[in-house]
Amino acid sequence: MSTRTPLPTVNERDTENHSSVDGFVEPPVPPTKSASRHSLPRCRNSFTSTEEHPHIGNYRLLKTIGKGNFAKVKLARHVLTGREVSYLCFINHLFSLFREVRIMKILNHPNIVKLFEVIETEKTLYLVMEYASGGEVFDYLVAHGRMKEKEARAKFRQIVSAVQYCHQRRIVHRDLKAENLLLDADMNIKIADFGFSNEFTLGSKLDTFCGSPPYAAPELFQGKKYDGPEVDVWSLGVILYTLVSGSLPFDGQNLKELRERVLRGKYRIPFYMSTDCENLLKKLLVLNPVKRGSLEQIMKDHWMNVGHEEEELKPYIEPEADFSDTARIELMVTMGFPKDEITESLQGQKYDDVMATYLLLGRKAPEVSQGTGALPALFIY
Image (cartoon, rainbow, N blue to C red):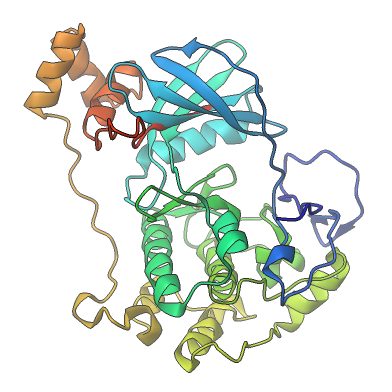
């Protein structure tokens, strides 16, 4: 993959002084060629590091897998269970970060990255989360090119299911893009990065303009207030187009040009795209947010259910939380956890080391032959 100037996510944390267009901060936008998958612009900075820290809590740090302005991301192994995790370390405590943690605690969907533990110190916040070993959908598209519609459908059904679940929990993501869609070892989608998510109330408008410009709804470029779900729906339209074509529907040499193209709402339909897929895009990439389809309607779309006629996509029903698995609790007692402490942590959903151990024991054990498995990652804020 060739080196590209990234198009950074625009959000309330950005303190650089760029010119703006109706509420958006002007980022550098690289020239793009829609026909080339290698020119698909990445919408966030990526870094690698060899810096190592042996242990934090019950986690042995293996390597740094990402680094940005506000966080380091490390791959770590939970020493008690052998599971790997993503470990995020946030150097600064930001208000929006605590909101992200609060939201992550209430989300429980198979296609959303799972939070296991929150470790807070005086200066640093650590989030221990599910590790998606397959990497980003963005990188998959760069490496393999556009998806055949059957593969894109399988991924998009999972994405829509997860986002609709968020909406029924009154959560809007606001930063849906190929870089925030991860793949696990079985190539299942895991939606990540809820840093710009927020609760919404019907009838009460949101007014924070955040997200990544190529995926942003036209009303955001116009500086208008919005309900919430409709901006995610537009982003899903951009994602579907990107999965099927390997390129973005709207691009430009700069933010002004990108804005003009988004507000026109015109995009090229590749010759290989099916009529059914084109018709679905017309329900998602609708300029008028009031006329944009809800995800409940999108779930019933014909393209969404081709090959799944007997299992039409329906809203996800969250199962009752299982915090009384006797086998796991007894195993934890042998590890040295007092039984009353286990009960207190699980009933209070404390997201501490006790609850993390319980949750990780309920996940698939790592493959001994390969030395890896479904491990947590450490996010350091």
